[in-house]
Image: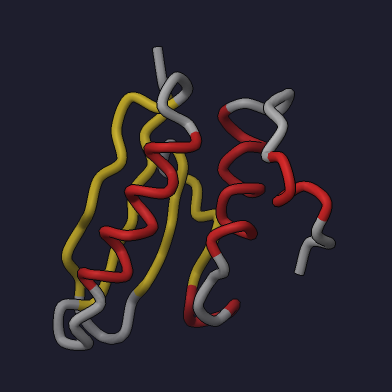
Length: 93
């Protein structure tokens, strides 16, 4: 059984394109490790990424994520042995 990734984004801020792009990146990278990547509309400036209900990135405290940072955090939970190629060679923020 795969893991569920959820991206909650602010509709007032029009962050759907950013959320959809990040979802595409995660689905491409973890196609064998996740069962779903869900987009959840929210308000109030929210942009939060969670894996199986656990928040791994929250814009309010961490700013907007770089895709490689989110991929590392998701990988650590869903596929710890998976190499992310050049993304692994960059220091984590």
